[in-house]
Image (cartoon, rainbow, N blue to C red; front, side):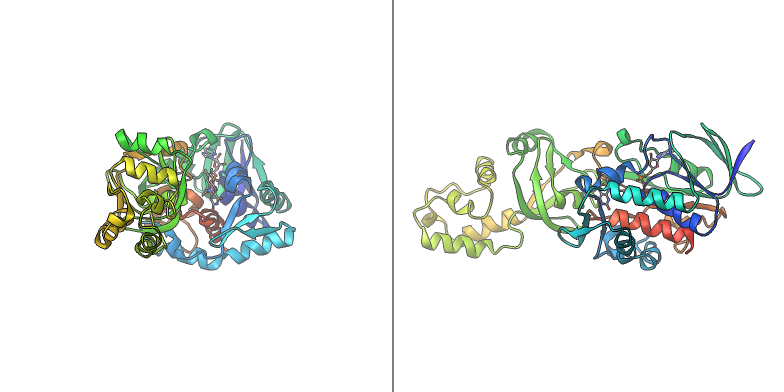
Length: 394
Ligand code: FDA
């Protein structure tokens, strides 16, 4: 005997829970299954426990996909303000931290409670500790064989996320189901992830682990002006996480250590005021002192006794070099720490309006498993809500 539902959602994360409640509100008998013991664990830990649940500047340009137009429709039909309205109705207070990033004033658990209450109120069923054994097409829709028995459904919504943080239960199930039904998968890769280094760079960066400074990190595809952090394994911080999503193995990343500042003017003024001081002293007005010492030890600062000995063209050359400070990561910290997965179910096979498979009616993919990856700063949750809403057809 099989349980029968209108909609079966695989994955009780942000996208799956949000979708299931919308489906239930339309009168559809809905079941959500998840192999984890608790729902929406990534919501819980996100944003340092306060969930950066959206970004008010959300626009298609903040997402990476083989098809940059794909996300437009869903994002336009469910905006950050639509999600904010839900929080406001629920009495969940929030604040803007920086760059349009909205966080809960309290714990992210408030959002999970809202998602679960909405699911219950819509008559939806949640089955945790339930793994998927197989999925097959039937005359009336689909049958999923699970560790808790078989479930028949008309509509199968795959919301099982990407591969980041396997310790939290991430699996490639969505990609397996996509391939089983003839969909292409853009090779998944870790994104929003720290860079690692080898050899001298690794030792050097580790020696100033914990030092942070504002930079512009760029490559041929994108540029981000935010903080960078030196770590025991290499480089991290928002600017590095952002550019990592645009990075490919073996490529360089160029860093402007003087982001947003006129370093030539500042060094020139410092030299005029203190000609007998050391260059390092002048540099410490621009950069953290431990970074200045490291740059000196790496031979990246001219070896002159006093600023008076530094010509204007030497100042210009120094600033140019450190504005184009090029590093070559040996890799990334990988799935263990990647905040999201880039790549995923190829959007070419999905309707951008409904997230439904173009070739298998009744099969939907939503959230992170789709080849739509947001920048750091609340964009990935906004994609989860928006794609879940699109698939509900409301
Ligand atoms: P999600 O991964 O949330 O849910 C998938 C669900 O499917 C999980 O519950 C999982 O257990 C289940 N599942 C997986 N495989 C299964 C299987 N084989 N069988 C059954 N169930 C299975 N984004 C953002 O916008 N703002 C933020 O502040 C943060 N912060 C953040 C911090 C950290 C540490 C991480 C790792 C990630 C973030 N993110 C973020 C990214 C954000 O968490 C992510 O994009 C969304 O949770 C994706 O939502 P989904 O519902 O698509 O997948």
